[in-house]
Amino acid sequence: MEAVDPLILRLAIFVMAIFVGYYVVWSVTPALHTPLMAVTNAISSVIIVGALIAAAAPALVGQEGGSGIAKWSGLVAVALASVNIFGGFLVTQRMLAMYKKKEKPAPKAEG
Image 1: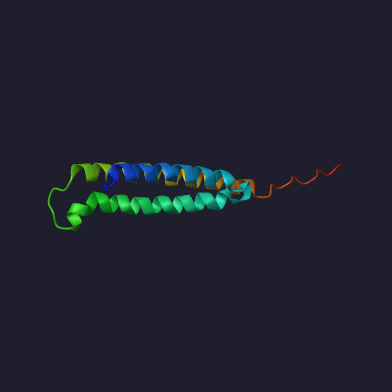
Image 2 (image 1 turned 90 degrees about the vertical axis):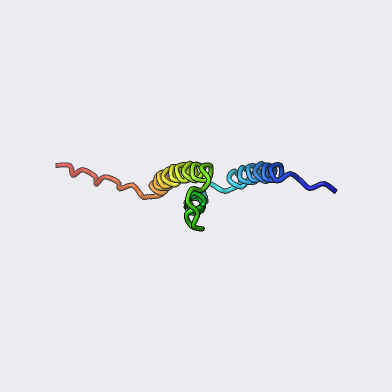
């Protein structure tokens, strides 16, 4: 029996995650989109921590140089996750603003 190539396995998991994410987001009722956004922001913050660890991994184990690919991929991951978190907070703020009651102007006194 032959072993499965790790790249193919990771690619298959990535494609399945895309389909699962698509169906999860579109099956959520509109009232739950705000909590869903909050959860995705939390997941992005975990991704930033992982990216920082990946970029600093050589320094953490006492190596001098380290892999340039790890540093650059860590930098790209931090940048993209930061944009995702910032955008998520903006969207969540706008969604929460829709639920605020609007003040009605007081009726004008006739006289």
